Structures are given as structure tokens and as C-alpha cells.
Amino acid sequence: MNRCLFAVAFVAACQSALAQAPAAPVTPPPAASNELSSSKKNANEKTMPNGVIIETLREGSGEKPAPNATVHIQYIGSLSDGTEFDRSYSRKKPAIYRMVDVIGCWQTAIPEMTVGSKAKITCPPGSANGRRPVDFIEANTTLYFVIELIAIVG
Image 1: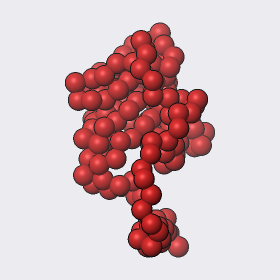
Image 2 (image 1 turned 90 degrees about the vertical axis):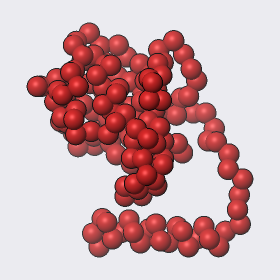
Image 3 (image 1 turned 135 degrees about the vertical axis):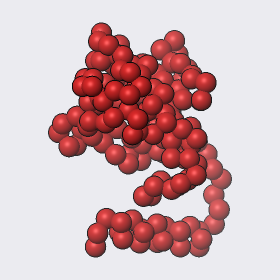
Image 4 (image 1 turned 45 degrees about the vertical axis):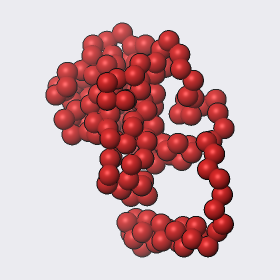
């Protein structure tokens, strides 16, 4: 079964199970010590006008990319419950993206980073996938990324 059909079957099974389960109160996940779930405000955290939060985990010493640059990055993407939905590290080489082709929160955050830096990015729904669901990520979901800016190539 291909990945998309599996995802559709999985979502349908989950929705069926949820419809049969009694409603449970929604509580935020407990604070964890890993980079993706840390949420306390600190001096290394900056909130951008569009709501994107950039928390510097490691300062770099290189240049900042221009908004139209092509960058090499390593990243981990997760949901608020800690579920990882993407990880470039598992592909054993940095991902290459043109800044104009990435989601809005990356277009906001990555130009604020310097080569060699690592940051935790909190992406409100409007700067992430917005109203459109992608794979198993529901519409209007806040996304979390840890991004390392490896190089600027153009």
C-alpha cells in the first residue's frame, strides 16, 4: 500500500476510534527537556510580528541568508504532542531549499539566523500549513521545528 493510502486508512481508523471513545479533557503535554518541547520564554527568544517565535539554541558566526537565497539546512519537525512528522537528519545530508519555496514561518525565521546557528521555531497555523491539512497534519495546527542553518548557496 503506498504511503498516501496508508495515511488515509490510518486517519480513518483513528477517527473511527475517536468517535467511539468518550471525550477526555484536553490538557497540554507536560514540559519536557528536549529542544522541541521547551516552551519557557528566555533572552534567546524573539517573537516576530506574524507570531513566529525564534529561540536561538546555538549562535552561528556566518552570514544571514537573503529572503531569496538557497540554503542547506538540517531540521526536525514536530507537533505539540512531540510527534515528529519530518526529520532531515535521517536522510544523512542537509536539505536544500530555495527560501521562496518554503512555508511562511521558515521564510520569517531562517533569514534571522546566521550560518552555523541552530534555532527552535514555533510556527502558528497562519505561517505554517494554515487551513490546508497535509498528510496526517490537521489544518490550523501549530508546528515546531529545530533548524540548523548549514550553508547559504545562492
